[in-house]
Image (cartoon, rainbow, N blue to C red; front, side):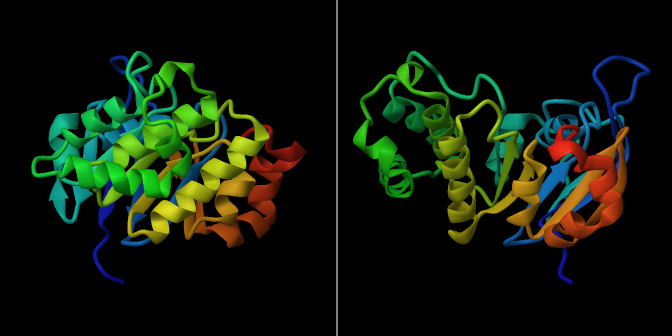
Length: 243
């Protein structure tokens, strides 16, 4: 197999001194894939995404983007290298219009043609094109999530990092967001996603990783993880309430 576009090797990280949330996590992401990270609360899923994007410093290990170690670099620098990140919370500028939010996204990477990229986002997210002058803070949670995704895609990243994209959304918008993730991937963007809706996310993923206590527990094709009785018993039981 070719070199991963993104790889973590032995990643150790945490929020306070001497308390590690990640305890040596290894993840590979290849061009064109959707890879989903699942696991119980406190497993380190969001911590992994934040560490990859430079929002949290790695204490040990490496984060490799096409073979180059980007651990320790600042988020704005990582963004210029081809990664974009959509956080779970506070992921839009609520006082700005959709168009203004997208314009700010274009600043993340030099040379971005803001006008062309904005129109491309309106093609991908027609609902946003219809409301381009609407203030983001007046939109529903699902609509704001679309604004956040579109803004992250403005600089034309190679890899999109998504942290719990369906969290707190109405069922109709959960379907819409997952459909957009697939569309974005089919348009050529590789996706690394942390998601609480494990069954739905793994079903649409090329591969998945199950984390537990900050360590790799299971990994494999998304469909195979769904069918694995050990994964089902430990992490998908009771309707997936632990994941």
